[in-house]
Image (tube, rainbow, N blue to C red):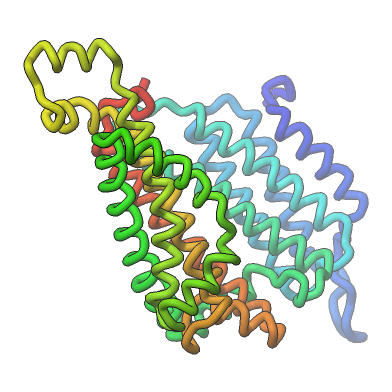
Length: 378
């Protein structure tokens, strides 16, 4: 093993580990007169595992082997640290925070090694594309847990992810009812109607120049309307049920689709349009075979933007009046009761649903516009 082979992440982690050693209790504090005073602490065991991970990184082994070893050792040490802090032993201990920082650096090194691996099979490539962001996301949760419990942050300010997970597990029925009301009714209906109507009006605006010149400035104006001003009006017009929230979603998704589709229909080159005219193609033939395919990246860009806008619009609209169900209703009600873990549980479910929604649209884009340069693999 040579120190010259050590990465900068491992070198910095080694420095942190050495500093942590001077603050590390090597024995458990005796509880009674007959209690042993020489037992190795969990923190010291985690320290040894992290030192082994630093040593593995310097070994002349293939990147995939070192990455797998770093992954296992780092997360084992982190698990030991978290089990100790769950009992309150890690509070206000400098060695704990130094070792968490060292673990994060080694995990960073693991992701760096995984990113540099060249794979030849589609399955392995897809697995790496999922594994790398999964490790990154897991460490966001780990650092969140370590900060809230290790630093003693009050629960009312920021609950730890473990408490939020317990709340989610214990409130599945409530969360599912809220998802049905907000997402499966208001978001889905409003998203489909808003995007579809924006697409149809964009085709008409492209065909009729008067409509395009008159509608586009209004579209840009309507896109700047604040949702907190639109939502109460829609609630007054369409009532307190999900229909008013769907109306807000329609307003929010209509104009991004309109603007992007009109811009995309102008994306085809002059040479391609001249070629279609030389074949005596009419407007609708040119639209179907040239201009709409060229506009697909713009259309999917609007669909991806609207996938997040629709969820935000429906949740915010529920703040201004709704039946006793819905994600926005639950957030506004539980924050008034200081049940912040339930509020964060709703936020987590909304984030997961929005990510899945966005991922479905992105997958459809990749399958539809595989010919576009942005989707080509080098």
